[in-house]
Every structure is written in structure tokens, then in C-alpha cells.
Amino acid sequence: MIEITELSFSYKKTTVLNSLNLQLQSPGSTLLSGANGRGKTTLLKLLAGVLTPTSGRITYDGVDIKGMKVAQLAKLRSVAPQRRSFDLAFTVNEILNIADKESSRRSEIIERLELTPLLNARITELSLGQQQRVSVALALLQESDYYLLDEPFSAQDSHFEAAMLTLLHDIAQQKGVLVISHHTDNVHTSFDFAITL
Image (cartoon, rainbow, N blue to C red; front, side, top):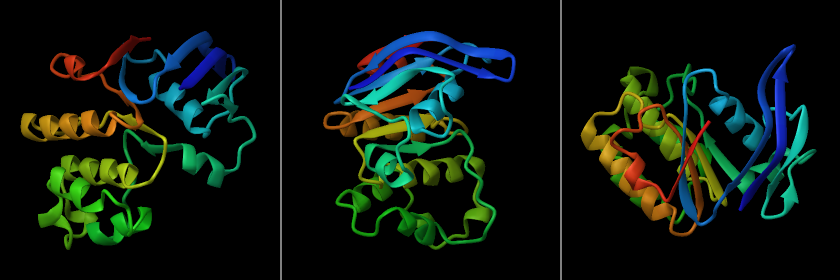
């Protein structure tokens, strides 16, 4: 379980999160939604250890992440940001090899996200939706306890959205999955828990 206790964060003088208390279950899937500017992406960055809280604490299964090294955090959580920058013309296969060539779920994730036909394509030549599926695959291939995904359904048609939801549901049987999404109309019933900021 991820436990968020009295969590506050400010950018300079602007308070984004104020005394937030939440629990995110694992195994299980949680959908986090809310209006623009409510701090959803900021919360994800705090959970990932990219940002440091102004006050409060975040624990993963009882362990405070404050001051953790990157290698320690990598074992706890894997992140798919809202927009991952793919500037270099590596192939999709080369990019996915960065995560873990030996992942037990590698073939399954690639197949279920329908990336097999794209493995030899240059990432810079793919559509935004295809790049987002590669980004999600890159996160899911990492053997972590929790998966934090920011807007994974962006630029996906209904077919790929459904495929991704089914895959995340299956992963959430053993791991913790947090998804941030503005697009909740068709997806909220696919999650075990729902939180609105």
C-alpha cells in the first residue's frame, strides 16, 4: 500500500497540494481524476520521488521514500509520464530493451499493446498514440511493485484503450496500478478504486 500523509507541495508561492491524505491499495488499480490544475501530475511526480514534498510523507508498504536513491525507487515504482520525450531515432525494440530484456512479461506486454509490428520502426516516425503505447510498455516491463501511469489513454482509439485497460486490470491482480486520466467516462468501471482531486 502507498500511504500519503498530510502531503503538501508548493511551486514557489503557489500551493498545489495541501494536507492530502490518501491510501493506494496493492494489489489493485486506482483511477485518479480531477480538473486541470488540481495537482494530479504533481502528485504522481511526488509519488515517483521526482519532487520532494513541502511537508508530509509518502510511504510504500510502510517505507518512507524521502531520501531514497534512484535505484531503490526503481524497485518500488515504475512511471509512464504524460509525455515521454523520444528525441533519438532508436527502434522500438532498442527502447524496450532499456527496461529489461529478460522481463517475464516482455512478450505478453508487447503483444497485448500490439507493438510487434512496430519493433523495427524508428520511435521518431511513430504517431503520438503509438509512442504513448511504447512509453506504457517501457514502464510495465520494469519489475516494480507499483506502476504510476499519467494519461496512458491519450491519443488512443477505443480499440487500444480497451486493450490497455485489460492489460492493466490483469497486472493489478498482483501489483499496484495508479492511472491518472482526464478521460474517465468509459474507463472508471475498469478500476478497483477511484479518487477525484
